[in-house]
Image 1: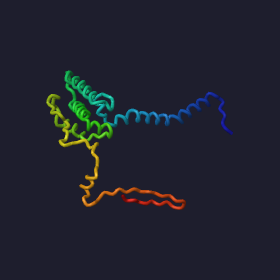
Image 2: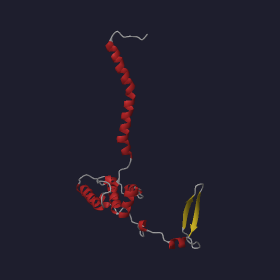
Image 3: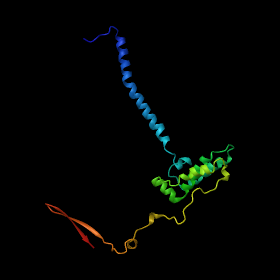
Image 4: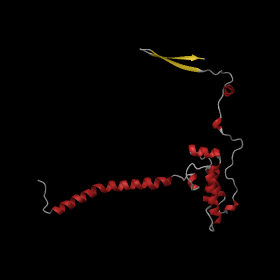
Length: 187
């Protein structure tokens, strides 16, 4: 026989305590997971160059220049010395986002091939004033060209494979009730 309590309020207390015990761990785990997703994960990734310049993503080159000039004037007018590493990040973001090819690669693919320059410049210019820095940080390679409009022609293939003639092959598939056949026609 089940034990029946003489006091109904004690059974209610027992019921509330068991409910709290049953749900305490899932609530704590849920709160920890939310904290991790909202605060830890976003801070684990480096800030984008747009965030460094305090502008919205995919802004135009004109907005990038305006934001840089605003930040630079704030740094020059401030009485206290700014961290050289922070200024180099701002300058690097400015140079990267004002070059149309680098900006396109960064916006589309997130390519940032020259990020090591900020670290090496920070070590090189440690303890110096902003006015002593050499600019530009990024050097455009001579002879660099936009390969997006490069079209491969038959003469390119003849240069690569001089003894081979290009063939145009067209697969044609004929269906019958019992079998499927693929035929290749050479033109």
